[in-house]
Image (cartoon, rainbow, N blue to C red; front, side, top):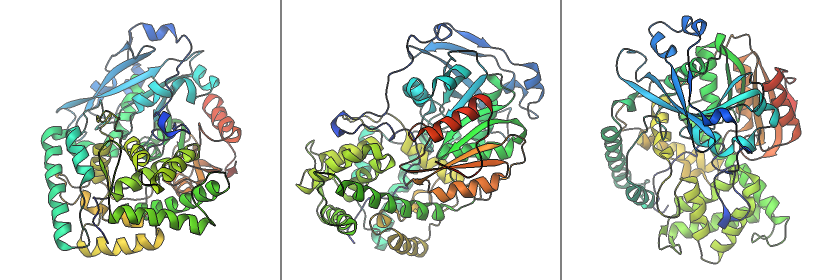
Length: 522
C-alpha cells in the first residue's frame, strides 16, 4: 500500500453537511435566512433568575451553579446570547470554573419552555446551528412553543475550546502522509501525533482532562436549570444522541421531551463503531452510484459494481500520485476520500459529488478538495472556522478506550478492508490518535440505563452512513421507555430533511407530548 495521512473516523455531525446545495461552487454550511422581523425579546437584555424549586433540587455541592443569574444579551442581530458558568471538574465543584456559550431564538408565540439542541460531532457548535438555521429548520409550531437554545459543549469553539495548531499547521498536518504498514512509518506517525497532543495540552490547559461526554451531560442539566425548565426538552442529532442518552441515564427524573435522531449506540466499542461506519459508508456509496447512473451526465459507466470500481481506481491513482488542485495545494488520497465522504451525508448534495468526480476523472481535483475542506471547516481563504477536528479527537480519547497495539491495529485494518473495500483502508489505525494523549479515557462503553417516566423518541435512517440504522434500534431497546421511528431514506439523520411522516410526528411530540407509535416506519 502507498503512504497515507493519519486516519480520522468520520464525524457524526448532522448539520455541517446537511445544508449543502446541489452546485458545489455555491455551497455554504447552512442557510442564514432567519426569522422575519425577529422578536422584541431578542433586542433587550434579560436576566434569568433561578426558580427556587429548581435550585432546591440541585445535586449536592452544585447549588451555586444552579442558582446563578444568567444575563441574556442581544447578539448576532436577532438572538440573545449568554455565558453559563459550570465547574471545570465535577469531582471538585469548588475549584476552577469554565463557561458554556449559549444562543437562543426566543419563541414566537406562547412559550412552553426551552428546547436545547445539539447538532452532533463531537465538536459541532449548537450555537452556530441555532444562529444559522433557527428560522428554517424548525416548524412554526415548534418555534411558537419553545425558545430554541443552542450551545457549544465544553471543549467546542466558544466554550473552553480545545486549541492545538495554527491554521497553517493544520494544513500541513492534513497534507502529511505516512506508510503505516511499516514499523518506521508508524513510529513517525506516532511521534507526530504525540507532538500535536503535547501542543493541545499546553495551549488548552487543564480543562482538556474534563471534556468527556458525562461532564457535558452535567453541564446540560445546569443549562436546563438556568433557563428555568423543571424538565429538559432536548433535540440531539448523531453524537448529540449519545449526549442525550448519557443525560437520561444521569438525570432520568429530569427528562422532558427528548428526541434522539441518528442514534449512536453507547454500548459498542470504538472499534465496533468504526467498523459499523465503514460498512454504512460503503452502502451509501453504492446507493449514490445507483442514483448517479440513473441520471444523464453521470461519469460512472456500467452497473453499480463497475461504477464503484471506477471510484476505487480513481482513489488508487491519487494514492499512487497525489494531484495538485488549482490553488496549488497537493491533494493526497485521504484528503480525496474525505471529499468523497462529505456529500454522502446528504443525498441532496449528491449532484455536487457527481460534479467533483467528473472533474477528478479529467485530472482536476479542485472540487474534491473543496468538499474535503467543507468537511474540515476550512474556508477558501485558508482559515478554519471551528476547532471541531481537535474537539472531536479530544472528546473521543476520553470517551473510548482504543486499541493501539501495532498487531491489533493491523488486524483491524484487514477487517475494515473486507467490510468496506472502498473506505476501510482509510478508517484504520484510529488508535494512533489517542495512544499518547495526555489523559486516560474515563469511560467504558456500556448499555445506557434509563428508568424515567417520560418516553424518549429515537430516530434512525435506513441509508444513514454515519450512524447505521441498527444503532437506533439498539438504543431504543436500552432506553426501555422509548419509541422508535425509522425513515426509509438516504443520508445522515431525518428530522428537518426527511418527509412529513417524520416531521409531523416529531412536531406533535415536541409541542403536545403525543408520543409516536413504537416502530413507526416512514
